[in-house]
Image (tube, rainbow, N blue to C red):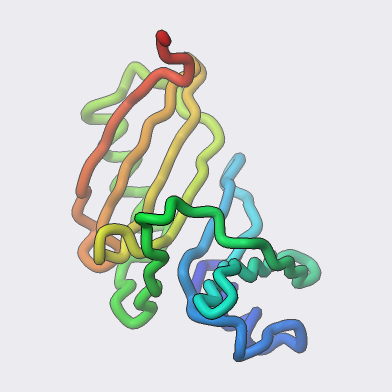
Length: 157
């Protein structure tokens, strides 16, 4: 599996990539058994659309209207401030799980590298075997855990 910055370089070196695609806003990957394919998203604020590139055996792209709450501003991912790679982030999350959530059996991981509230973060969500979501946000700059929560997938109305 490619690291995020390697996937971004592969994309930028490809014929599919268009420099006019807006600004880098996130990286997204679903990991299952340690494997996954990066999706890298750019935001075109002039047309209010997201341009998504999937970096697999081939590079595919699609454009969609930005899916966001009108109050939410899509922020630029500041690549030069990302000091913690995904492997390091997952080591910290694994340590937290052992210390605080050891009774939970985690499976598939949904991971987003994004700018959240002005900070570049790794947003890691695991689906557990007990039908809960374990969410951990940690700084992509320092590796410090910002917040963590465990919630049931099925909530009472």
